[in-house]
Length: 70
Image (cartoon, rainbow, N blue to C red; front, side, top):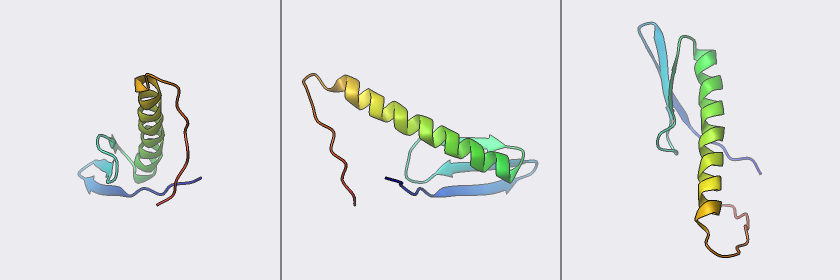
């Protein structure tokens, strides 16, 4: 299942700065717009995987993962 996120980006001087609106902490800076979008995508994937792994580790008992859509 694919999820869509919103990258908010801006050009400041020599840098492109951006963040993912729906996920706190995913903020990046690059010299080009294209590099920024690539880095945001990579960082978002890593943040989501980290959160999923953290949630699995916090589960003290056997659990079941069920995908739901909103």
